[in-house]
Each structure stands twice: as C-alpha cells, then as structure tokens.
Image 1 (cartoon, helix red, strand yellow):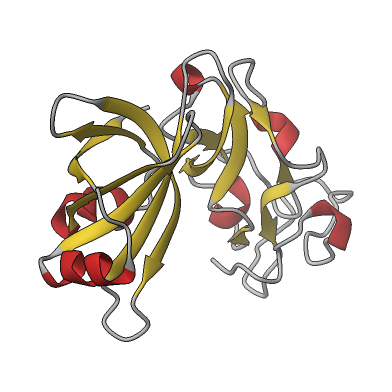
Image 2 (cartoon, helix red, strand yellow; image 1 turned 180 degrees about the horizontal axis):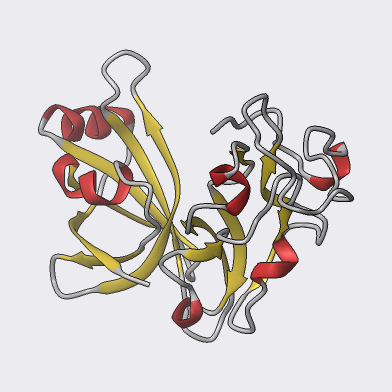
Length: 211
C-alpha cells in the first residue's frame, strides 16, 4: 500500500490556548496512539490534502523534527461544522508484525453482461474492511463483474485473498445486477434469481448506498 508522508513538530503544550494558536497559524493538532504513550504533534493543514480528500486508502509516515519517524494509519478526523477546516486528527501507530484493520476501496472491473442486456448494476459496497499485516494491505480490491447476469449477485466470498481477512459476513453482497423495464432477456437462463428481492441478511447497506 502507498504511504503519504506528514511532516510535523512535536507539541509541548496541549491546552486549549495552545491548540487555538496552532489553528490560527494554519497548523492542525494531532495525536498518535498505539505506542507506549500518546505522541502530540502538529502539522500544516495542507499536508493532509492527499490523505483526506481522496477515496484511496493510504498508510502514513509521520516525520517529526529531530528525525523521529512513526508508521501509522488515519484513525479519526474532525472538521469544522461551517468551514470544513480540519480541526484535529488522530493517528494509530502500526508495526510490521501486528495486524491492523482498514477500509480498502473496491475497484470494479468490466461491464456486466446483465447491464449490456438492459439490467442495472447496483453497488452495495464502495469499500471493504479488511484485517492484515501492514505489508499485505492492498491499495484496492479488484472485483471482476464482467460475467454478472441479470439477477446475479457478487458475494464477498468471491473476493477472498490469502493476504488479508474480510471483516464482513460471508453472505455480504458486494454488488448485484437488477432487472429493469428495458431488460432484453434473462441472459438465456430462465431460472436465474431476481436481484430485486435481496434478503436483508445478505447486505447491511443495500438500502443505504445507491449507485
């Protein structure tokens, strides 16, 4: 997985007055957890643009003045409710021999056969949560949907990989091809199931996420 470097300065004072002064100077107060003790530091707000404003997943290399370096992942971020400026960022320190959990974006490959016959592709997931050693985390998860017919669903079990473990039930539906009024046929298979009726147990966000 690709890494983004954040250059920062360790904070000596963590009170409200010091934090406000940092923000007024265009700096973002940050905390790194996961080590022996929390590390408080600050970094320029512009340094977070490639990390925050992207659908891609990245690990982070935090380089502090004096040569101290930490490997981490983004854990939480707070935005101003009006200006959307970054107010605070939490990181979690990672170690090469300890597994971590991250949301990895999906990369859908191909134009489904069912869509070519007039069906509609519905993506229930834009990313999947996986657990792996840092060195095994992928930049994205490929999902080949070329052969999906009308009524077909792509289950998470079709995407299994030895390098990481999915943190979802096996019956999670990643995407499906629904029948539409414009559908020509059912792709020569009269007994294909209709994807319009997807049991709630097969996906926990099918109603919440729309293509």
